[in-house]
Amino acid sequence: MKYIALILAGGLIGWSQFSLAQSVEDGKKMLYYQRYESAKDILGKQVEAGAGSEAYYFLSQTYIATDDSVQAKTILENAPAQVQEDPLVKIGRGQILLMEGKKDEAAALFNQALEAVKKKDQSELMIAIAKAHVQARTGDVDYALQLLNEAEAREKKNPNLYMVRGDAYRRIGNGGEAIIAYTAALERDPKLAKANFNIGKVYLSQNNPESYVKYFEDAIALDPTFAPAHYELYYHYYFRNVNKAKEYLESYIANTDKSVNHEYMLTDLLYVSGKHQEALVKAQEILQREGDKVQPRIYKLLAYSYDAVQDSVKAMDLMNTYFQKEKEEKLIAKDFEFKAKLLNRFGADEEETVAAWEKAIQLDTVKVQQAKYMKEIADLYKKSGDRSKEAKWLGTYYNHVDNPSNTDLYNWGMAHFFAKEFPEADTVFAKYAEKYPDQVYGHYWRARSSAAIDSLMEEGRAIPHYTALVEVAGKEPEKNKNLLIQAYGYLAAYNANTLKEYEKAIEWLSQILVLDPENSDAKANIEILQKMVTQSSASGNSGG
Image (cartoon, rainbow, N blue to C red; front, side, top):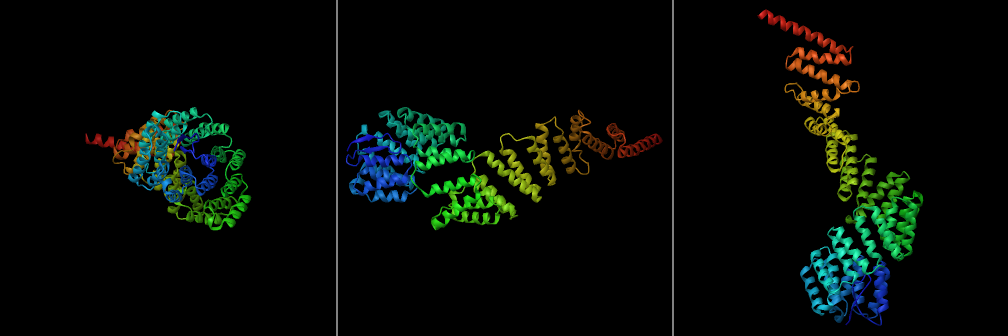
């Protein structure tokens, strides 16, 4: 049996089956283009016609690509005995075992496959084994990279080696090395659209639209029929430009197998285009036709559409149905965001609404979106009057975002203050005063918080903060008139009541009259304090 290198990224290994080669190749091409139904049809017919190991292997790979490892396993287990002994099929069987977590049994089959051929012919098999490790959740990516390095020492021209290497680096989150690997694949096959596409996927994971759009467009320029790139651009523009999204969706549909998913996507586009009534009609048609087979997402689409036409009751009912029917692993942050908004609108139990927001935070991977949800929770508690929980979430928000503002810090401190959590408020405003020493707010609210803690003025906790406020606010006395009057009044009261330093208290009250000459309270208190000074002086003289 002669081993031959395959150029297409969808297939890594080939055994020449001269009578059926073209048809098997067609199946592999469909796998490469992610036209899975066509691949199943073509390769399935080859298996029925008695084709060799390659047809079995790539048919199983097609089912693995569509998350049906059970059927993939059945195909390989039902293969004739001589096919099951083929090195390529042993690798396919080993991949299934690896996906089942049976690492030792998988390793035994992989080793048997390698031992069945001469060392100089092992590179293609090594690539296939590496691919199995990269794709399986329990696979060993480090071992996969080791195998690829060994294969490269024998075969440096195969683009598939570098494609699998790029996938391995993507799996462990090393985008830089993944891009280098995909670029190497493109150098070896300049028409390999999937290499550009995969580079785009790296940038997509980094939320870099300028770069990922470029590489998806480059993939289409190399191969206009490469549907996955059309899909990614459709999804990108779905949130930005409905008309461009429609263009890419149409080109995606034109280059993929006919599927009910196309109807789902077109219905999605009706919704995002603002054609809510049309989206409702189309979604209901799909639901009626598909019945129990309908994808749960149609209930979500109906919910969004009903919400858009101001029918929140139906929207809530349909979202509940969606959550009952959809698999938990397929739920996304936006699902819980929408649920929380509906619950809030109905005045539902506060904790149930918050639980939905918290789930959205847990599922989202974008910091900005997580921060948005945190603010929603804080706002909810503020409206309900629970300032303590509002403060908790504003603090979570402040410590989460990269560049929080002075307003964020201020609101956090104020929530604690109005919750009568004065030590916590003082701590937050201490941060404010340290970060923004030339602003009055940190000093003022530290003073207010400290005054609330030391309500009898026994410790003088607020004095240094009111003193700092006088220094800062005094630079613009007209602008900060009211704050200065409060500060002078407190300092006067502390000197009079706690320290019994009446003359110092009169000095602070006199500062109020500089700002507000007709201030009756200041005048009255100065008069009282002057009498006390006189009495104290007379008492002292009498004692002498």
